[in-house]
Length: 268
Image 1 (tube, rainbow, N blue to C red):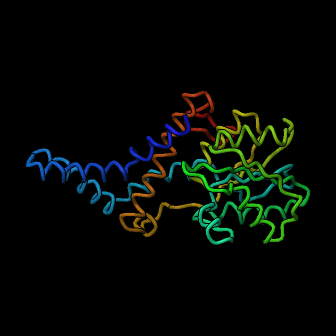
Image 2 (image 1 turned 120 degrees about the horizontal axis):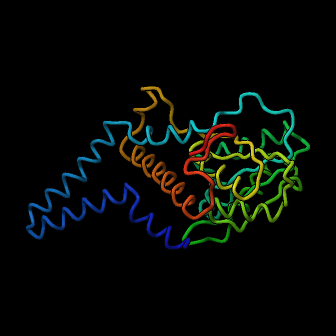
């Protein structure tokens, strides 16, 4: 299931689909099928033009990022702090020998900050290696090296290194830590990833406080129109992956709602 989903997404994500559609148009053109070539090239290039001119990606991401509010008044105490993998690059770390972070780095820095705010809290990082072609390192290996270098006491963080998906993050970490129902755990992940993550962790039996970080957009014209074609397509790919993932996880029974919501509101 993991391999099939990865391969299908590589082929069907919006950026790949538009590229394949354009290539098909060129093949039809060389085959002198001008009508079919015109349709494919018009759809491909026209869609790319709309992506550049309109903030489609940001508008797809904004409902995800705004679903759970930022923690403006931190609680006096939390029992544990969880950070989800996805913020490190295992291949670059393996190649150069130093921890490499990507554009979700706020997940890692927030854990360090909260470890100081809550010195008695249990710290946990969950992340294996979700690549089709795996290297020697897991995300947990990179996280351990990073947190050690930033001064987090080596024995304080619990590492789960076998998970490849958010569902496995929740299930395998629960087996490792065995949280009690009365415990409250801060859940750190990117804001756009929070709805699916909260739904999965709740379904797995965790009592989590969403702690969203790493925002990619804002409802301001100057922010909405940032970036060129690669950045805009990347945001559409990211948002599409999350929306499709929420539907798939709900159909598989891994979340209780199509679009998980904050506690006290009606989920959809």
